[in-house]
Image (cartoon, rainbow, N blue to C red; front, side, top):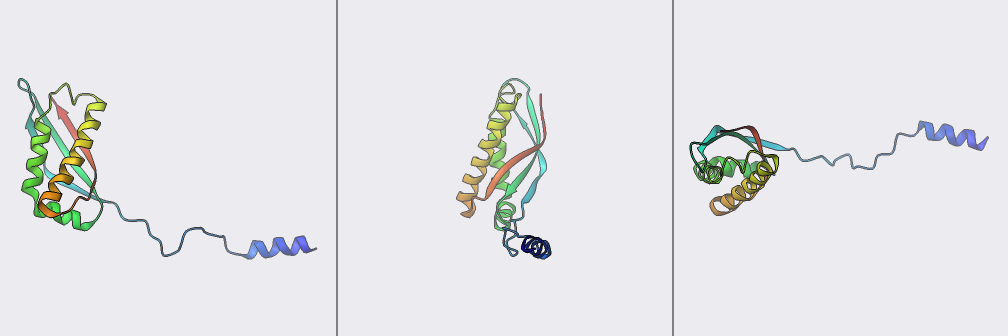
Length: 129
């Protein structure tokens, strides 16, 4: 009889949750850099056209990027154009470029805005010829 009562009581209790009700996951902030980038690559008559979106840690980083758009774009143009088409034509080359872009952007933001909140760079369009 005790077992039946225990099962009945447990069935009436709300499910136990392990997360706090007030804990919220931080919102992911994505920011598209527009217009897209078109740069000449190293070598003979090769170019890259790329659309870039950034994953940011907070709104302050987004504001810093907007306020320092010329420096941000310049840093990315220098980074992108300093590649051979062969270096960025495979997956490992693109991933390397992606990590170098995060580093470049955070260094530029540190220099111009005392901020370094770029978490990731995503190439949403990537055409090299």
